Structure formats: C-alpha cells, structure tokens
Image (cartoon, rainbow, N blue to C red; front, side, top):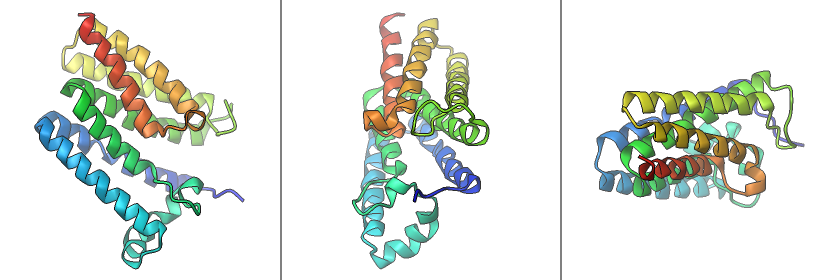
Length: 209
C-alpha cells in the first residue's frame, strides 16, 4: 500500500522547500568560498542526520524523525537508505555555487525552488491530465514552466542581463520541465537536475553576448 501524503503535509513540505531561498540570498551576498564551505558542511550534516534517523538512532528519531517522518515520501522511508530531497537541494546549491557566476547560480536555484513548489501544489490540487505513472500532470508541468519563466524574467529584468540570458534561460527551463516530468526514469532527483540544467543553459548566454 502506497503512503499517501495529505495536501496539508504537501503544503508543509513545500513551505520548507521555498524557505530554502535563503541559499539564493547567501550566494548573492557572500563570497563564493564561504558558500562552498557552508553548503558542503550542511550537506555532510544532513546526510548524517538522515542516516541516523533511518537507522533509528534515538537522538535523530526524537528530533528529525519526529518532525519530518510523516511527510517523507514512500521511497524515502524504505528499508534501504535513500536520502530525502534535502541533501539533493543542498548538493545543487553547492554545485551551482562552485560552477557558475553568481547571477546564474542565483537564477538557477531560484527557478528550481519556485517552479518545483508551484508545480507540486498546483499539480496536486488541479492536476487532471496525467502524463505518466509517476503522477506528473500536464497542469503541474505547465505551472512549473510558467513560474520558472516568471523567476527567469525577474532576474533578467532586475539585473539587466542581455537578451541571450533570457533566451538561453527559456531553453533551460524547457529542458528542466522534461527532467522534472521524467525524474524517475532519469534516476536523478529534480532538486539537483533542474538547477544544473538551467545553470548550464544560462552559461551559454555568456558566449552569445
């Protein structure tokens, strides 16, 4: 029997997800070396905490487990240890911080956080036309693309980037939409794949100016 997460729990999950926008602020305001050290440390800590919760170590089950076990997805609570989306998100922040200029890293991570949040919430609430057996819906995917484009447009306009930034970003969020739809087939968590795909696409704009 599949574990069903209520819409209220999904709201809680995505509120936590969206709160990770502090990472975007950190990338924009703090030195690259500091962010790399910060995200690497956080990645190590969260992996230890989640593994401790999985192994039922009392300290971790009474803290992390008590707060989050009810909202973990079924595959995140199986016998074999599998990290939740949090380590992948932090790994994405670490990767984009290390590989890309600030504006690209900030845009790519923001697109994932905002686009994925609204894709899940709108898909759960309004999704009627399923794309695949992973419960991805046309409505959720459209929401992902539209909100991702909104984030892209805001960064492009506010930071006065060239048109190539916008066009390459559109290509990136289109590819990221398919990565989100076929997440299970690709075997790459979309918390990680989306910002990397968008970041690589935006990097092309540096050569088209």
